[in-house]
Length: 289
Image (cartoon, rainbow, N blue to C red; front, side):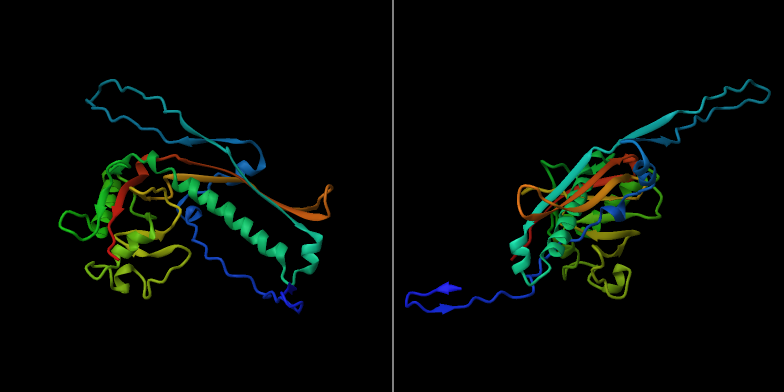
């Protein structure tokens, strides 16, 4: 209750619904392969991923001696080295006096924050791509000006970089920031028609915007960027492996205070295991107000 200058009291009313928080969508689990998560959950903090090595082609002459090649013993080690934690407490008095399920609301918020941390980590692997276009220091200008590369051109170039590495067409994806898709859907662009984007509505579905040039298009605010560039990525699920070892949520009574504590833990690892299947374009955008 608020104490006014004249001595009267006016009760304060708290709304029963919390303010809706806007949350950006997550894309990591959609663009990574998770083939090794099952093994890691059982035991160990490192998984060794076997790879098929290159075989040599030799000239052959009739009745000549053949050279036998040993099978290449190639492997990549994936470390489960990312440990993210969110912990909070709710005093019993606050819990009793609240007319909303405050524990549930903040538990959902904690889960979102952990997912965002995982997403940011995966999209931060852009520098491991074999093929790059532009650099962090000299990004390419994306737009429709005379000296700019259009968004469609950027997608086509990334597709060509993947083609140069014989990356399969199946399962290709692209991740870009919202400003990329603003440019893509500009009146000057060729992708304004929803049908051209590969579905009837081009609605936003869990970060997926549509499909263009053989790639599923994902929008994310979690891609690596600074004031100078955005690290837009294209590839297939062969490029990045993601393994989650432990996802834990538990509540407990705290000993040093009258409160309930909630802690959520996420333990995972991610690595580019086939860099040829990943291409990165460092782009910048000039958007007129």
